Length: 279
Picture 1 (spheres, helix red, strand yellow):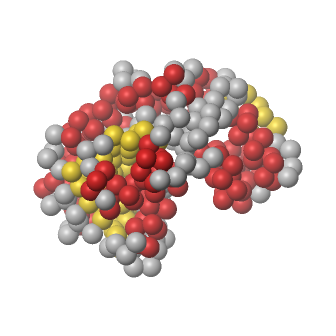
Picture 2: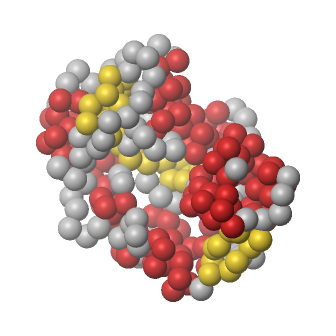
Picture 3: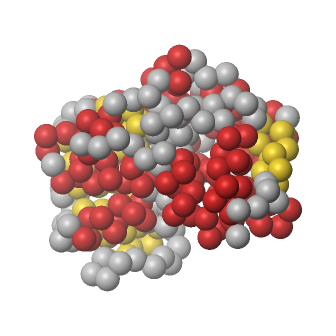
């Protein structure tokens, strides 16, 4: 049985579906009630209180571990989840980490995530670490303003990074949970092209068939918006990357193709699947 945390999210939702379609027994975990595929067990649990995860881990052999924004804060102890998994007989953990752990190792949120990675490597469990860059689905933050005002507001409009489709992250995670050939690897996950926020807005406009105006935010405005959802440390670390990506953050990684045998999906594919959110 495989446990998937963050069951309502843009990665865990398609991952749960893929595992269920592969015939696996799956337990989906989220803080609140969630719609899950037929045959999937749902267990409500808050990872900020790791022992609440114990019922979900009963009989589990593998765990997909996704840490929500508040588990990146300095006072959180996400390494307790790894200890709990090992104590409950889990043999394999696939951790959703962050590209910034390798590219910006001194950022406060990256130091915390590195500690989780290190704890996993030292746990004695089989492990895989996934390090995606920016998510294509972050564009959903613009959905309301596109619907109501025909506007995308974002900082650093002409600075791009190779954002990754969360469906590709889910597909890689499924492969790593189901195939032990991937054990012991760090996979950097990116999309196939560098794309700027302004170009993302143009792609959404083309899919809608109607104009979308781009409004450039200051860094301060962007941070104020981000800290409604994530700790300030994580907001600052993220803004550092999208303001001035270094060569490693601009690199198109081969790892999606290495695992899946196909190229990563472009942003246009994600927009085509998600366009209803912007109408």
